[in-house]
Image (tube, rainbow, N blue to C red; front, top):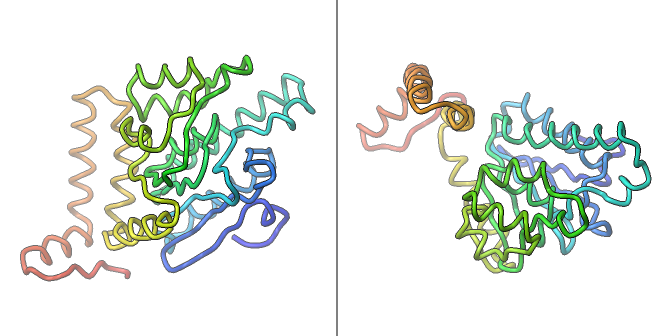
Length: 263
């Protein structure tokens, strides 16, 4: 998770149990160029295969979190094949975040627009600074935010999602929390402290149960009710057979902190 040309546009920092991915195109408001998406995809693929990483924090440099697709780059390569490839690349990356075994926290310090809003919606959790904003403004330029819509509509209610998509208006951080797009909103100077506290809380849990639970959460969402219960029951049975569950239950019954196997 080091080196290469992508290191200039994506900073990857490792700490015990944590991988911090920081988009670093502040002059372009961290727009998702093909190169930045490629760098993010490589980092996500490496993290997915690395059991030492327990949680991922996705952030950005500069005043904006992410302005969405790099429209200047797309207009420079306007062929249908190139545009199709760009959207396919972005869709794959967003799905990689959802399918990543580790939880992902979006650290949102500024505006997140279009595919930037999609990034936030694709993350498992999101903590925003009070000055952050969220929008799907494609309608303003004749390009409806159809792919950001997929993630947005899985986070907020239909009417609220359609209002954002049809008007293109910016939603402030407080309203985004009301809608369920972000978990917590804090003053800008408390953002890192809040993100780190949330990460530390999750890191204290069983890594086995976190991986099992994240996968099960997203899979059951796409199932009918009865099928979801059948699937979840099978998952919970498998989880119950894990050493982490035995240790966690024994620790609870013995009124002591758990000591997770392998940690």
